[in-house]
Length: 346
Image 1: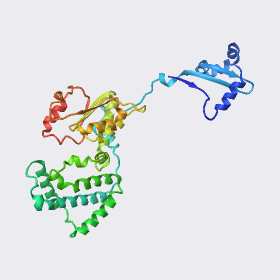
Image 2 (image 1 turned 90 degrees about the vertical axis):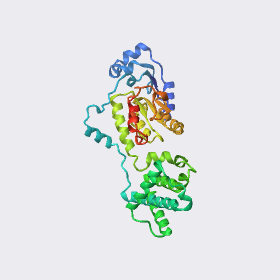
Image 3 (image 1 turned 30 degrees about the vertical axis):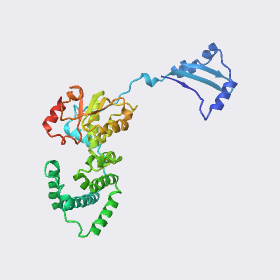
Image 4 (image 1 turned 90 degrees about the horizontal axis):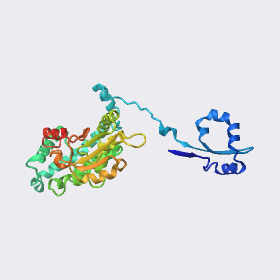
């Protein structure tokens, strides 16, 4: 890349112009005869000088040449993930955890808010309206059974509704002082206030959670999301060893993990250590949002709907075409873990 190095900047543009006007271009023979010592001292810089004006009290010159850094290599040393012991990898991965500033009291307060919504939902199930909507099978039935067993492990709520309301307000005031707690309690409030509508199937849970950008903020900064940086660091170690890696993320959803992985893969010049990053989810609704959110890495990104419970080839995926597969907090979702792993291995 050629750069013209001139003195034409805001600070000295006028003095530079005046110096050039007051100087004369010396004869080429005279120039090299009288400035040979300068040439010996400055070497290549002197040899690529393209213009020079000299005078009794000022001089003006222009140097045009190739950026030396563009024709040189630099070395960056990384740890070899294949030579590290498991405990060494663990140490490296866990160093990337974003330390939470939230103490246990915040979690206790959040737990209380959750319990209030759970008790209110259970009370609704006992009402005339709610009785008809108690799940009798499937995941809903298991969820309600778990809730009923779980509340037995906690002390009962205050005896009056006014006391409950007062403690709820006090708990929220403490929780929102924490960044992670703030986005988490917003999600708890939104889902808790809509539990009866969810069980009557008036609205879908995902519909409630994805309203606005809260869902995306939740998966990026709520309690428990520090594991995203663990995943990102390990992927980074693999990419350090094997630049040009091709990555498939299954169940990427809101992109909470994707964000940290792409940041870890970014080189100093803005390029990526990955050659391809395929962002997938079973729901197409996440793809357009993800394409906009990760536009900075558009050159390597692909966005596809993908159901890991079905044959990958039948969904348009070439077999054995990825070096690394990310499944962050999604392995529990399929009906058959064995079938899901079989499809991943393909």
